[in-house]
Amino acid sequence: MLPFRPRTFSKSQFHSQSQKQRPCLRGLTGRSVGRSLATAALIFTSGLTLAACGGAPSGSGFGGDRNPETLKLLYWQAPTILNPHLSSGFKDYEAARITYEPLASYDNDNNMVLFLAAEEPTRENGGVAEDGKSVTWKLKQDVKWSDGQPFTAADVVFTYEFLSNPEVAAASGSDYTSVESVEAVDDFTVRINFKDVTPAWSQPFVGLNGMILPRHIFEEYNGANAKEAPANLVPVGTGPYRVTQFKPGDLVVYEPNPNFRDLDSLAFTQVEIKGGGDATSAARAVLQTGDADFAYNPQVEAAVLKQLQAGGAGSIASVSGPQAERLYVNFTDPNQETADGEKSSVEFPHPFLSDKAVREALALSVNRQLISEQLYGPTGEVAYNILRAPTVYRSSKEQFKFDPEQAAKILDEAGWVDSNNNGTRDKDGVELSVVFATSVNPLRQKTQEIIKQSFEKLGVGVELKTIDAGVFFSGDPSNPDTVNRFETDLQMFTTGNTSPEPGATMQWWTCDEISSKANDWNKDNYARYCNPEYDALWERSRTELDPAKRQELFIQMNDLLIEDVAIIPLIGRTQNAAVSNQLQGVAITPWDANTWNVKDWGRSPAPE
Image 1 (cartoon, rainbow, N blue to C red):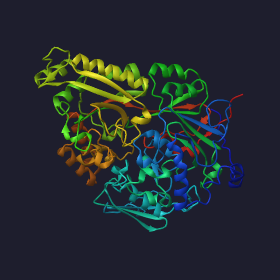
Image 2 (image 1 turned 180 degrees about the horizontal axis):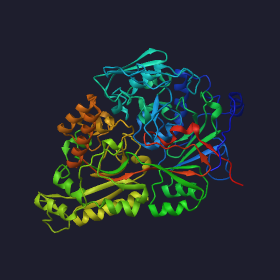
Image 3 (image 1 turned 135 degrees about the vertical axis):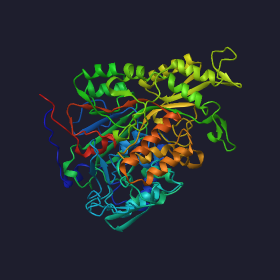
Image 4 (image 1 turned 90 degrees about the vertical axis):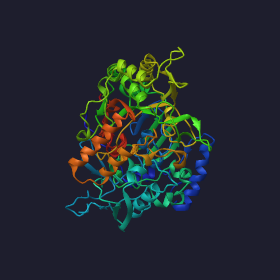
C-alpha cells in the first residue's frame, strides 16, 4: 500500500468551507438546542430525512463520481438511533462512536488507549485506590463539544446519572451496577466510588459502553422521556466528526467537528454511512467494484467471500475475539400474556424449553462443525463456550458435541415421544415445536436451515422467522420482534463481552438482569434465565481481587451456563470488515466499534 498522507486544514479553512451548513447549530445550547432539534426531529415522524445543518449535502448518495475527500462506509445493518446508551445493536454503536468518545478504550493487544482521559489510572499514580473501592480519572482540558461548549467532569457525572436512572432504562446499565457514585473532584478530575471492593475499575466509561453524553443537551431528558431526546438522532459529541444528516435505517452523513482538538489531522471533509441492502453487495462494493471504502461485518459465506476478494480492490481485516453466534433459548412462554399484555414473562415458564432434557437434546443435535466448514470457513470456528476472550477466561472443559443419537435417547427417556404419529414429539398434550427467529442475512438463513433439518430429524417441529436487522436489533420497546422482547422460542445472533473485563457481560445471565416490560425490555437477560447458583458465583467475582481466583470464578460461570444449556454457542466469529486497499489507518479491536479510531483513517492516492 502507498503511504497515507492526511489532508490537513485549519479551523479557519473549515469554517469557510462549511459556512452554509453550520449556522443552524451555532450558538445553541441547553434548552435552545432541545427546542430547535425537537422541531427538526418532527421531520422523522413523516419519514423524511433530517438534515441537521441545512439541506442534504452533495455527494450523499453512493452512485456517481467518487469524491476523494468523502469516506464511504456501508452497513447492511443500518443504524436507527445515535445514542449508544439506548441501543442494543452494534450498528448503532458504530455510527455513534464517530461522534461520541469514552474516557478510554482498548486496542487489539488489550492495551488501554486514552480518549477523553489525560492519563491511565494506576496504583502508582494514585488513580486506583489501594482498597479497591474507587478510581480517579484525570481528564483532558482542551476538549469541547461540537457545539462549542466545554467538556468537563460534570458531563461524566451526568452520564452516570443518566444511564443509572431506572426510568431511562439504559442498555449499558449493566456496566455500572458496581458503582456507588460518581463525583467531580474538580472540573477535570472524576472519582468513581464503588459499592464494594471492585477489581473491574476499568469497566465504567471505557470502551463501547463508556461513551460520554453532554449534560447541557440531555439534562432535560434524564427520565422516562429519554427516548424522546432530539439528540438521540442529532448528537452533540466530542469526537472527530459531527452529524449533518440522519435518516434512520438508511443514511448518516458527518462533517468534521469544528471544535475537535485534532481537527487539522482529519483526512476527510465528509463521512457517510449508507445502510440497508445485504452483506454480499456491501462486501462487493469494497472488494470488487471499489465503490465504497469500508463495509461492516461482511457476513457472507466463506466461498463467496473468497471469490469477492479476488476482485483486488480491497481485503478483509479481521481479529479474533469474544464474539460468538449463539442460539438463545427462551425460558418463558412467548404464547401466553400477562394481565397487562406482556408475552415471554417470568410469570409463565416455557412449556418445554424449561425442561433441561429438551435443551440438552437441542444442543446435541446441532452440527456446529458443518456450519463452520460450509458457511464460515476462516471467519469462524466451532464455539463451545460463552466466554471466549480474553483466552485466560476460556474454559477447557469438554462441552456438548454433535450426537443426534444421544439427543434422541434423552428425549425418549424424558417422555417426549411422537404419541400421535404427526412427526413431532409431544408430552402431556404439548407439541415439541418451536418458532426460530433471526435477522435477515443469507448466512443466517442457511444456518437456520441446517439447524432446522437437525431438529426435524430429532422430531422437533420448526417454524423459521426472519426479521429485518434494523428491527431485530433496534431495541424498540414497542416492537415485539426485537431481540430484547424475544417473543419466539429460539433466536440467533452474535454477541460477546465488549471489554477485556468480562464481569458486566457475565452479569447478563443473573436474575436481576431479566428483560421485561417493567424495565422497558432494556436489560440484557433476554432468555429470562434465573439460577441462584449462577448469581452467587457472579456476586463473588465482583469483589475478588485475586486474579487467579477471579479467573476460576468466570470459568465456573461459563461452565454452569453450558451445562444448564442456558444458551447454545454455535460459531466463534472473528470480527471482520471489508477495507479498500486505499483506506489507511483502520485498526480493528474486539473491544470497541470498528470506527473507534476513525480520526486516524485516511486514503492513499490511487495507483497510476
